[in-house]
Length: 331
Image 1 (cartoon, rainbow, N blue to C red):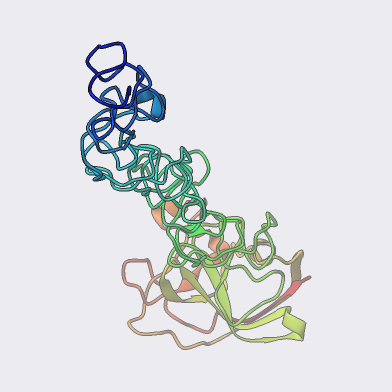
Image 2 (cartoon, rainbow, N blue to C red):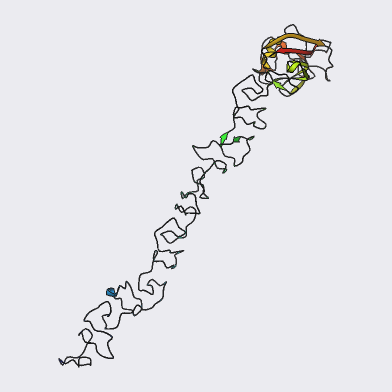
């Protein structure tokens, strides 16, 4: 009987002799096989005997996960689908567009991997001047960050009266938006003799107005009328100002150049019609712009724009019946 402790060859039974010793061995195949360990016991993960033929990569003598050798006798590590310290996650794949990276770290903004459905971009830096913000949102006009080489400005609002207009372009005269505190008007064209000059100063556009109108070709000279008649061609009781100094009353003067005045307000010429009268001067009386040559930088207006002024820093003329009460220009 080869199942007891003495074989029929009178040799003591031993593991590896290809005979299963009853009550002692589970198996005996002469070597390690997929079903029999080298100690003639049945293969079982957790028996502390690594059986390569059975597919065991490790066997640490227990069936606990998380200790380096799993309950299936496989090495534990990133990518095995089992979360083990210090892993944050382990989804068992190499896909870096899901919520767990192939490094077993949870996906997050700034890891340089675009998390599908959650991030628009991820360039791995905190630079908000490139095409991907540090919030992993694609840069766009209106996000409050100036994209280098693409945007001139980005103030994060839709207000076109400040220094940055739609399209993230710096506000400029001629863009069609009136920049508050900087421009009086902006009609978006390069026509200089219409209602808005090429320097974004308010004009009249060949029609007199009761509003201040910039005289084209000047920096800060304006005209307005107390009333307008004759289809906008006649200005009654005109007033003039320079910059923010108001109160000027145009007056008769030997050097009056009414055609120039009309043309600067957008008309083609002076009609030849002008009336004079005694208009009350605003107190304190004084102040006259008068010159023989045009020089705004030294606070001069040419003779045709002489007037009675109350501003005492200017030369003055008394009101005496020679103030202009109406002037008519030719469209």
